[in-house]
Amino acid sequence: MTDTPGLKARLRTDLTAAMKARDTLTTGTLRMALAAITTAEVAGDTAKELSEPEVLAVLGKEVRKRTEASEAFAAAGRAELAEKETAEAAVLTSYLPASLTDDEVSDLVSAAVSAVAAETGAEVGPRQLGLVIKKVQAAAEGRADGKRISAAVKQALS
Image (cartoon, rainbow, N blue to C red; front, side, top):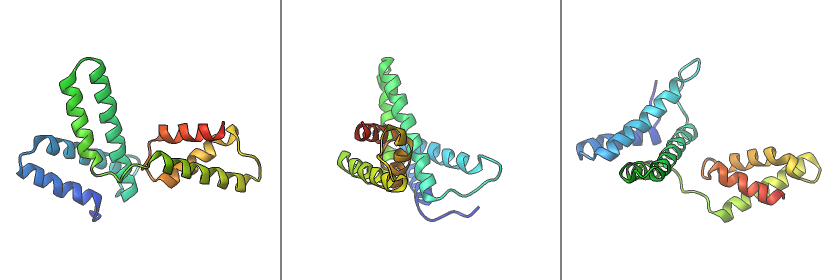
C-alpha cells in the first residue's frame, strides 16, 4: 500500500516526534489512532487505502469513543481515568478540522431543507427528516456531530 501524503503521514511523523520527546500520552494516543486507521483499511473483503475524509471519520469516531469513556469514568468516580481519556481526545481533536458553530449548522439545515423541497416539489416536514439529515451531514463533512445535526433538523422541521 502506498502512503498518501496528508493526515496519515502527519500522524506518523508526529508519532515519531512524540516518541523522541518521550511524550507517553501523545505516543499512545497516536498509536491507537494509527491502529484504528489500519483496522479500517483492512476491514471488509479487500484492503484499501483510506481517503482523507475516511481518515477524518475514523479520527472523529476515536474522539467520540474517548469522550464517552471519559464521561463514563467521571460518572463512576474514576477522575484519573476520565482525565486521561479527555487528554487523549484533545490530542486527536487537534488533527480534526474546526467544528461548525450552531449558526453554521443552522445555515446548512436551511439550505438542505430548501434543496429537499426543490427535489420533492412539496412541503418539507418530519417525513423528510432522513433526507434532510443526509444532505446536512454531506455538507458538514464531519465537522459537526450527528446528534447536533439531528437536533437542528428536528427543530427546523417541527
